[in-house]
Image (cartoon, rainbow, N blue to C red; front, side):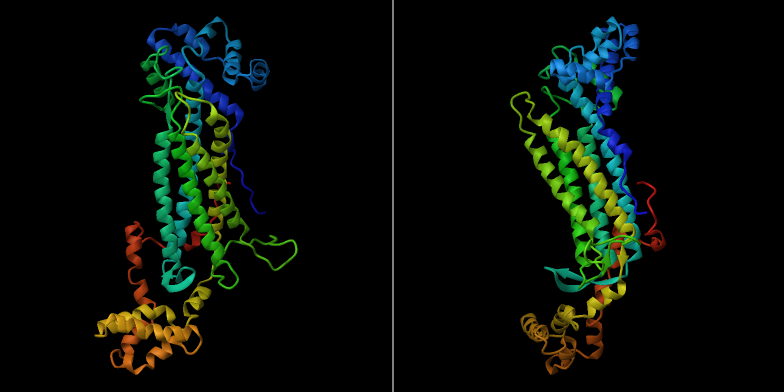
Length: 446
């Protein structure tokens, strides 16, 4: 059976029960901090640790007061006795909402980093397996000079490593709470209560705030997620292009029983990769919304809140899915080295034009003359007048400067692969074993 995406842990982060549970943790951490400060009796603080809520009761209360946080606090208060007067002491809604949101985002980022680590492992395996798999490099979609498929994947691996560093930075930026009151002045809740609350929750306290945690932090995170999505889009687009019938150097796995088209039985479409590209557009649009949320009126308005309830869970869940499906494709990727080699040779040596030109320059010809001479042969070859390599070898002006051995060296992929190992060394993969047997290993994580 073809596996289906399922990530209960990520879904649970954004579950409504979790949403209020994080806020409950914030409220109780504040109670403990007040007790430490001497305002709340320790016995009352102990009793309040049992405060609980149900979603049904929150909904009942909100239908009357039309205020989610008040409904939540009232539901908590009903579950305990007179000690409930210490709940939400000195707080404003955003103290609880933003600090609780930081806990959710931190958990979501940790799950996304797990996915990025799995992708990095898959890229490493395939890059090592195809370190010497010759293929044509293309610029502007046109054959340029030889590369290896492993080198292409190594570039992607470097990009994924940068994304993990960016995500770690975004995690630190977003893992911040605030317990500073209605406009951030600490008029009704002292700074030490904020510090102790955030420490208990494993968060940093915002050094300074108004009524909210500033939304540049959230924009930083969502833009980072959009960057990851855009890289996945780049990777997927490249593989989609390589899967085109006239190229067919690689293709996404096509399991037994899978259908590519409802009307054409022969079709093997890169539909999973296309999903990745489509969802990347969604993530980029969410980044735009997150940037718009940075601008709020004065000490705060609420225009960001409704948008965040859509873009934050949606961005995290969508990217989690994108990472999952792309990693699965990469692990099962079908690679066709023979087809890659055939495409290297399909232009009759045109791809070695720079080598011919440089060899002539080294042999004494001016660069301008060498360029024009080689380009003339290339132009005739493009038009089908002759084979480029044969024409070069038969040109007496070239033969006067370059013997057969020199031309043999030029019309070879070897110079283009000379420094491939250096790239692997720079990536810390020098001498690593070939893990080709593990490159199609199934991920135990759904």
